[in-house]
Image (cartoon, rainbow, N blue to C red; front, top):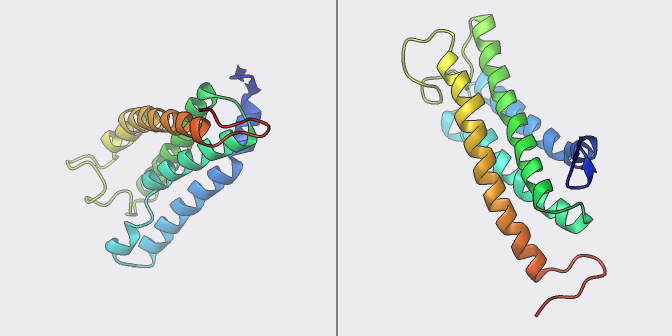
Length: 161
């Protein structure tokens, strides 16, 4: 499947370091919580915030590598947000399967209620958080790409104005 003139595999190849970055933040958050580090410190390593940073960095990669346009930016927002939500759901499912708690199943980070399977929490990440993250990420990154193209020329291009 081609999006914005590039195969999906090319998008994934461009984003591999950012996928790794998100996985590292996710793992670090899990390990910090497992080792009993305070929640104040654990909150610093947020996969949701790391996802926003990753989308921002993806726009820079797209612009400076001449990798395409706005459809590519939206695609990267979708891919990075999907990856971050899948990582969170994996952590929740692992906690449910092993009968343990982790940072993603604590009441501070989960949907309140009598849901031992955390189905509402999982459903929220796969629908609301995925959709909202993708839409907001795509909107902000398209705006950023527009500013970049206006202010910072790509290779071989002159500044307009």
